[in-house]
Length: 68
Image (cartoon, rainbow, N blue to C red; front, side, top):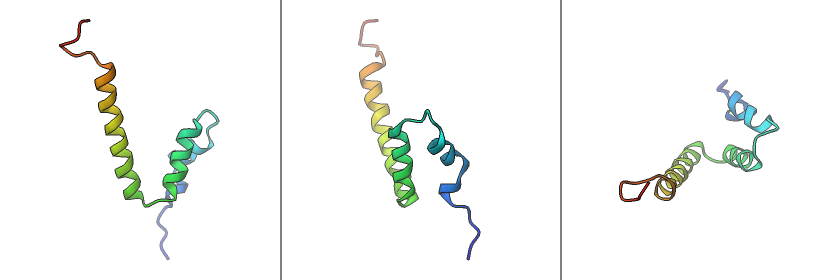
């Protein structure tokens, strides 16, 4: 048997799940992630972050072609 730490016991994960001001949305993502393969979770989160960053940049960041 191994003494490797469990992801669900990590201090950051516990903080997110126990903090009263953490959104239900974020808590749901963390809980869902704990039930999945960690590599798949990281890939999905990186993909989602990329999509939102790029969409944000297109929608909200000024470009040289837009008047200020």
